[in-house]
Image 1 (cartoon, rainbow, N blue to C red):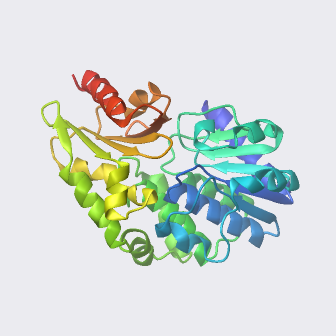
Image 2 (image 1 turned 60 degrees about the vertical axis):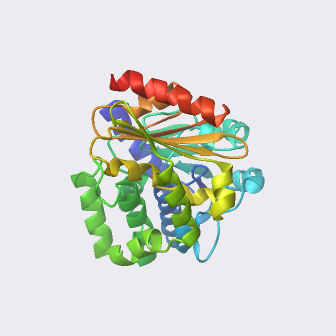
Length: 329
């Protein structure tokens, strides 16, 4: 998107949020800290500004992010039609892909005129009447904070913590290559407004159940290396969940573990689920994993991408190894 178009869309979203009496906020299925933190923050800031705001989520809130929703949990997809029709706007954050909005595609298409999108991923469908897509932003939380500031809405300590959670989690706690002055500036302002990095880190990353660590142990034990140790592949099968007692939402960040190996340039994690195989891809600097994901119907960023496939996990694994090998060679 051209710079002027992005600027115009930002301003239009600010104006539409400012004039709306009510809005519904939703993010993608299998949500992460960025999507959930952004949703929680926009909801809190909007309500403080006198708006009627509801939240909706395709799926459940992972346990590590439940602290963002102590007062109210997001509604489920069965309430979408009612909540969408009662709202002046539908605000989609941290995605612009129908494939990530499980079961909502038809309902969203029918209400396109009232949809606005705030997203930082390059992969985008034609979902909303106004889409601010800024792939230079480290997180949707950075973009949401800029919108809240432009609106002059208040940011109390819980709202600041939600936004900080969004920015910090999507930058790997400011370790990933997307960490830039814009993200750090937002983080600094949020700390000034009451966000406590130590407390947030403890809630997200130091509150694991033993079952999650048992699953991580099994996953690392089964890791395979290819292409002269430049490609790391990990698989989690349904049996692994059954054996360890871990939940599907507890695999977040597993894919990054193999990047501890100095030679690894690309990391893959395949997770077998009841209805599909979910794949996460990561890279250091040379390989654009979003291009690999796009070949299989997925998308994301150059250094972090994902996809879902209905292929058998063994077939999907070999297809992805072949695609990554082609790029690495």
